[in-house]
Length: 324
Image (cartoon, rainbow, N blue to C red; front, side):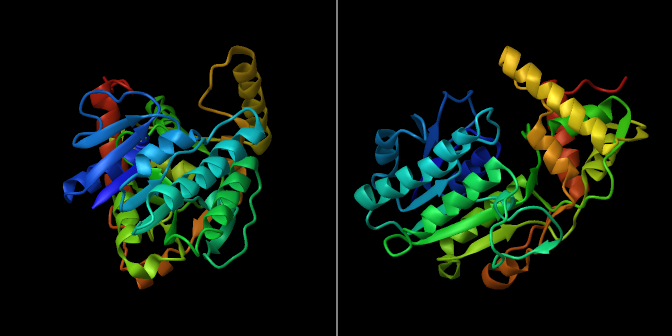
């Protein structure tokens, strides 16, 4: 099979490219910058932006499978979320109609942010209820994808918080743990998935005919929390971390201050209002049973293993200092 992957330079994108190459697919990888040596082994690298229709047309030409992972997760202007996350989806679908009429599958990377936070497990048939611009843009991307369902075989993956080696999104939690702090944001459960399990789920959505027309949460049956991630990271790093409760008002104030610094300097800090809103939500929990029942998908990696692999990766590359 010939696969085209947007966002191939990202955390999940790299894992998906590895999985596609490992099974023998010919992979064309769209990236915004040239990858480091060995970052996308076996793939044909296409330099370009997912909002550039010309780059998308080049990418999809002759493709059997298209995976749309490119998007923006952090932006100072809410309109940027829509322009990139929803706009690139429409442009890529239009490119597929024009250049890949025999496409076997178009897999869109969605998000639970489109469904909105919940302490009780959300199911795929519930209406969208995003609470911030990123989630609204991912909901719109899904609506756009579904509007092409009469012309292309569409499937939507909704992965939850993704863990594993190479992840930047959760690096802050590991650095907090390395500092000997076990910050506690309260009892707010989170569904999650290991990056390699997630990539395997994307392949199933591309291969199984039962996936066409559907949206599927991809997550482990095991839930955690932000505090749970920090505690597990501390164990993996060999650190005794002291529990520190974090009042909601303090987190909001720190996030607001961080956003002011970002606007003034252009430097994107690890903490921001978007992350604070995620941490202060009642929970981000989904029911992953539909993917299991319809596609036979199971996220098999335990949280301790995923976090342990991530910790070793950070230490080997110097992203986190070793404990002396």
